[in-house]
Image 1 (cartoon, rainbow, N blue to C red):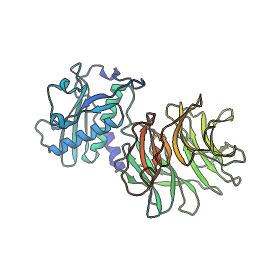
Image 2: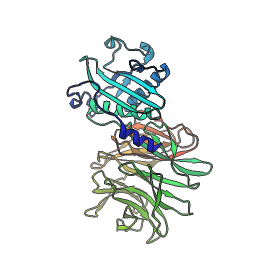
Image 3: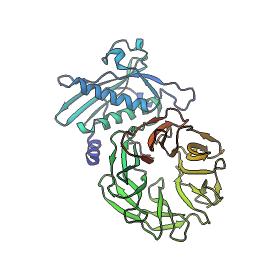
Image 4: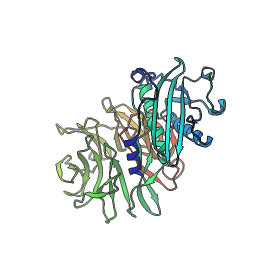
Length: 428
């Protein structure tokens, strides 16, 4: 499946359908403004290309998939096709549409051609056009690619539709790693250890996954290539080998080891598993490293002050400062892609909830509450959303929300518990 997707992207035709001037350079929506309202958009059902045949069901499927991807970003409000019958109309203004996406398709066997244009209704002109060709099985990838181009044109920043979410799925007393699309669809198992597998972390280019496996009876770190399926041992030192975190350039990893004592300490290792240097040296348990986007700092969890709290280590000066002071149990930090915030789960009272903390000011914002235990936050690659695990419906399941805590919704419908999500950082 992954090989087919990679070949599809390599063969994709991404030229302009129609001349659109310099529309790519224009930013229509300022998503950094707190007063930003959702933009009204319509995507009538796709129609067969001239001279081609195609089922109405396929045209509706393509429209729905694209619309759902756009709405997921939190920028758009979609006009229900039922209002206008799903067909093109000459009076989009009357329906309140600010942008319209018109799509055509042609399918032959396992091949698919999609042509799409984005129309600025107010200006009455085409803002964007694309043509994609590939295997029918990859129709979602084609539509998601166009969605991200739309986001780029309208906001100046890329969309997240091509990103992936990894998580630990529990089934039949085993825990394995799964990878799903950004919206939770197409979840598929990528490990078959028949054991306990934890802490999946995408490499910066999203081509590899590092994780902890207990298949040999104790925690050992492995790397798996997501394209070839090949996996190999990364760290197998005496004691435990856990909490892997890739450096932003993908050349190194921060990991937690007990090779030199009973308590775990953080070490910097290379991709071959050789130790570059020791990063922490205290009596506490030190785990869960997460890198600043510039690679100059590392946040991690330590109980050296008596309870688990989050600290920041400057990798040049090796100076450490405590970041969290509010709450008795703060763990699972994840540094935002923009570098300004760290998301984490903290306990106040009897339940864990998700918080963000401003790295500079220390200002804390609680994002979840009164909804079971909420843990293991992971930022979307654009820094606008967070995926996390929640027990609000019973067993742990995956939810996403926007960075201010709004829009909380479940995204994975698989049976069994889902924990430890990780959102890939690569956008295309």
